[in-house]
Structure formats: C-alpha cells, structure tokens
Amino acid sequence: MDQKIAVIADDLTGANDTGVQFAKQGMDTVVLLGLAASAEAMSAQAVVADTQSRALPPGQAAARAAQAAELFQTGASRILYKKVDSTLRGNLGAEIEAIMDVRGLRLAVVAPAFPKLGRTCVGGIALLQGVPLEATEIARDPKCPVVESHLPTLLAGQTGLEVGHAGIKDILGGEEALAARLRERLDAGGGLVVCDVWKEEHFSLIIAAGLRLGAPVLWVGSAGLAEHLPRGLGIATSGPSGRPSRPASPVLLIAGSVSAVTRGQVAHLQARPGVAVVAVDTPALLEAGTLASEVERCVTLAAGAARLGRDVAVVSGGSDELVARTTALAGRLGLAPGQAAEEVASGLGLICRELMALGVFCGLTLTGGDTAVSCCAALGATALTVFSEVAPGIPLGELRGGRANGLAVVTKAGAFGAEDALALAVDALKNQAACGRRA
Image (cartoon, rainbow, N blue to C red; front, side, top):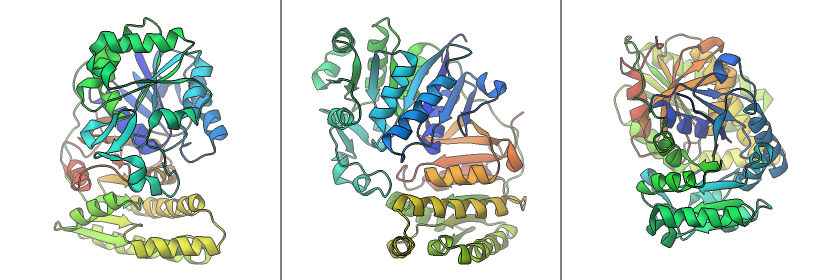
C-alpha cells in the first residue's frame, strides 16, 4: 500500500470513531494521545492526531491544528483528513484554514454529515434526525453550543476563506456536476465547499468528484465520509484483523457525559442482570476537601461489585438535579462551565486509574471526550490502536503504553449512538474474541 492517511481530530472520541473507519478496512491505525509520536506510531498506514482543541478559543485551536499538520509534513506523503464533529461543535473554520495554510492546500471539501446516525445536510442546513441543529440539545452543549444550523454561514463566520456550497441540484446532477462545482471554487481562488449529504451513497460521489480535480484537497468530515475514503481512493485492503480468545471478565464503563442520549444508554445497560451502577457525586469532585473521599467511595463500591463478577458503570451525569447542583457549586467556586467539566473529568480519571489497578477488568468503555482524555492520561497511555466497531462510529481498540498497555477499550461520544450502544460495547469487550491483546 503506497498511500497513507493522516487525520487531524479535535477530540479523542472523534479521533477514535474516525480512525476505526480505516482500521476496519484493513489499514493499521494508530490514534495519538497528543501531538508527539514515535517513529513506530508514525509508520502506521493511518495515523490520527487528537489536538484536544474543540473547546479552545479559535486562535489556540488553529495553532494546535497547524502543529498537527506540521507533524505530518515529514516522512511518508499522506492524504490529509480533517475530522470534524458531525454536529458542528468546535472551531471548524479556524482549524481547516490553519491546516490548509501549513500544507499549501487551496481547496477543502467539507461533508460532516453521518446519515447512519441521522446527521444529514440538506440545502446547507445541518439536521439531527431531521431537526435543525440549533433546535436540538446541541444548541445547549455546555462547552460548545451550536446556534447556527446553516453550515456555509457557520463556516464563513469562523474563517477568512471563501465558502462555497454544493447543494441538492449538484448532488442530484451526479459526479460531473459536482466536480464542476468544486472546480468553480478552485478556479476562483480556492476555499471551502460544503457538500449536501442525505444518503450514504453521496460520499462516494463526493470523493469521485474531488479526485476529478487532479489536485490535492483537504478532505473534511466526520466518521461518515471517512468510512468511504479508503475505498474511494483505492487504498482499502481487507477487513479488520482478529484477536486471540481469553476468558471474559467484568467490564468497566466510565460515563462522563451529561447528554440525555448517554443517560438513556446507561439506563438500558442497567436493566440487564449483572450490571452495577455507581453514581458519582460530581459536586464532591470540584473541591479539594472532598475529592479524595469521593474517589475512594466510588472505587470501593465499584471494586466490590467487580469482585462479584459484575460489570460496573461509573456515571457522573445521571440526572438533571445532579447537573444543576454541580453547576451551582461551580458558580460559587468561580469555575466556568468548561473548567467544571474538566475538574469532573479529572476526578473520573482518578477513579479509573484506581479501578484498573485492581486487575479485574477485561476492558474499558469511555463515554464523553473529556472523560476519555482524562482516563487515558491517568493510565499513562500514549496512543490507541483501533481495529473494529461495535456499532457505527463506536470503535473498539486497545491502549498503547502506560499501566494498562494492551487493554481493550471502546470510546463513544456523549450524544452519540442508539439506546443499546453501551450494552453492545460491554458485550464486545466481554466477547472472547475481543478481550486480551492482539498477536
């Protein structure tokens, strides 16, 4: 395989759910936990860099995106993919522009939709299950609210580059019509072109049209477009590699998202036999005087359940009342919403570290980007290898480095997945083909 892929993502769960799209098509895939990498990691066919920049100010986010682009300047030539959130959270325009500047790219083809999960773009309007984003819970995201559903308008407010739009008629017109729209923007000086997508088949059309240009482009999308890129570029090989069997053991779930989607998934999992839920008193994680005792309480309860063979879900955002108490205390402590979320995620990382040190869990499921980053950092991991999916956009892989090297792990964004997503994750980790290290 001559061509390799480099992905720049702005949060860890997104990095993983995009990286696994390449892994499940036979590409050796590594997700970096930071913007430094060993020669071994950089030798992978697909390398994903997580800038952890989604909630940063635009200037800082652009700087991290540029740093990631520079990381891929040396070594093997790679096709560049900018992973963005399918619900448009973050600094999309600023990061795209920074990457294009570093790499000297004139055109970005932008298609963040993910139809398999009900995330589409029609007439430039980003829809979640048919509802404009600004009318969904995404508009109330505590760290990155999205209050503009028209993607070209949103991007135009985040970048100084020209933003074009390939709309319904361009998509229905087929490959030639869409290529003409892209060429028009390129000939006019370049910039970004937002592509409507409401069906899976549109991704292949977009890739084919982009290839007609005969010039390098920055591909921009979520896991949706990423799934079609290896095949569209002719670099897909085979399916994911298998793993040796190992007796099943309990699974640990750390759920740090306050999303109603995650709550429903936890409730679905809890309804099954053999599952213990430990509710974290999140206000206690915000103060130094109560942090240690709350971590100890949660670890004691979770450890007791695990030693009885039960799967354990440690949950921090289980009710509106708890979220309200946490927010109120954060205000009294002078913490901004983003700072409070980081403090809670840090506490969850401590709980994760103590529980994994017991050696009784065969796998780990992490829900919420901040939570995933904190737990991986607490375990000393330096990267993740992803190799399959438990459900669309929900990857299964293993940690590299640190005290949990080789541990099987599933990551999931908070407002993501069907009701049974966490149950599927636990089942995948407990499955004899999913637990243990790969050969």
